[in-house]
Image (cartoon, rainbow, N blue to C red):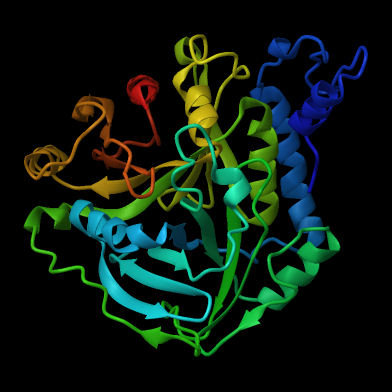
Length: 390
């Protein structure tokens, strides 16, 4: 993968290279806080990525998001699933156990699927990215993998292996319903990117699993029908890794960098990558400047310090958002803030408190009418402010 600004800067800092200066962004090894993220630098890089994807033959090989995979501690698999069912439009589709893991699949029409998983005794390759001051009690818990569709997995893997991309398995795992492979965890985001070629679309059982019936109860809250598809997922990562994390994701998919919103008062940047307008978006949030201390740093850098780089929230498109918000509160859902935004501004949003089972925050979002944006700066500012309590 292309090595951008941040890895070079980190290397200079770590090795304390005398008079070190990155050719892109300029900070020296003895002055790490002189680092500043810059869209001018990033845009130059993403333009090159788009050209390279065509040159490598990757254009058109990766489609839309198919699923997110969330690993939990064994005792939290069913409670985490029940929590999602009780707070979104997701419902149970299937559950099965194989030699390596137990899975529960949740679906809602028009959305990427949710796969909740517990490994059956096998060590987690994500553990080194999971353990922080506020996560050490659940060392194997995180949203681990984003799974994207491809029409030609063999060709895709051949291209990426020649580029040096590393995968968790030596080869593609072929099964009755699909073929699958995923990358090793990213050193920038801690996330893995998976790729699936369907033989039977939407079926994740692949021949060596047994069905099981997790004790989830019934879904009986009518207002949850207002909560629709997964709109976006936002990963928080260190400021020094912002460019590298976005570039890496673009090189693995056909997504493109769309725009970024800077919230200088909270030292935060929210960057958006999309395949096409109107479908799922991948969001990256970092500091503008690096982490200093818990007292001096903004909410984003503090979160990464406490929880490590990971997905912070999952955003669900929500109809009748005012009524849905009120109903969720009445049923015990705790929020970080009230609804922010208004119809005249184009959208409304809010954040829940983090899950005690997955650390994940739910965002509920509604865009009004012909709103042409993705976020507004005022909303992002309020949402960022609210996460300072995490």
